[in-house]
Length: 164
Image 1 (cartoon, one colour):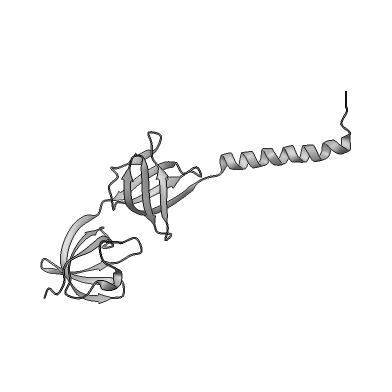
Image 2 (cartoon, helix red, strand yellow):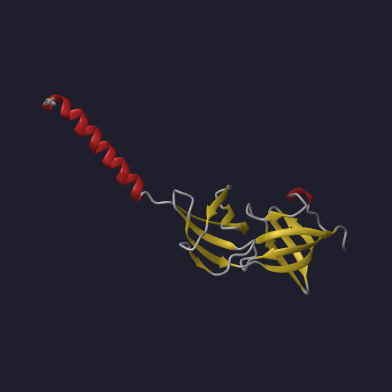
C-alpha cells in the first residue's frame, strides 16, 4: 500500500478546499434583477428589452412566480437565475393605446395633440419604434402609441405624415 506524505497532502487539501469554495459560491450565486419592456413572450421564452441597453432572453415555466398576465410591451421586473431561468416576473404596468398629432419635438419629448389636450410623451431607449426610426418622426405626423402612466412611450408608429 502506498502512503501519501504530509507534504504531498497539503496541495491536495488546498485543491479540495478550493473546489468546495467554488461549488458553494456557484450554488449561492444570485442571478440578476432588471426592468424592461416585453418584446415577446411565447413557448416559455420571455424576451425583454432592458433599461441596461440590452435584450434578455429568459425561460419561464411552472416554477416561475408570475404576477399579472404577461403581454407584449408590458413594463416588467424580472429576477433571473444565472442559468437563465426566470425566478420572478412581475408585470409593473400594461401600456395603453393612444393617438395624436405631433405638434412639437424637444429632444426626446414629443408634444402631441390628443383630443383637446397637448401632452408630452417621452421617447426612451426601451421605446419600440415600428416601421420608423427616431429621426423620422416629424412635426405634423399623426401617430399611434402605447403609453405608460408616466407618459413614457412603449411603442410608437406613424399613421400619416403632414397632418395639420
